[in-house]
Picture 1: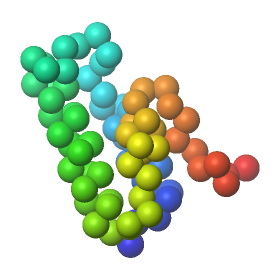
Picture 2: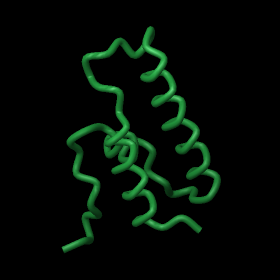
Picture 3: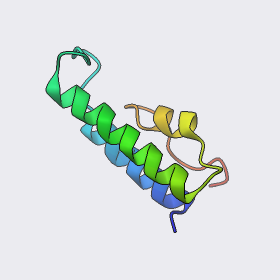
Length: 73
């Protein structure tokens, strides 16, 4: 079962593999693959956790986002 720490670790990996904001997401293969991968993960996580926050995860995948849990101290 996926836990919050798993979602956070995956979001961190997505940040590290982001193709870059300067690339054209429509024409660039790397960018299209990155967004397709993120969408596939969202679908998987929703199947396993109906309370999964899609918008929060998508924001967390973007470079520079804070992926640490709000509960973490």
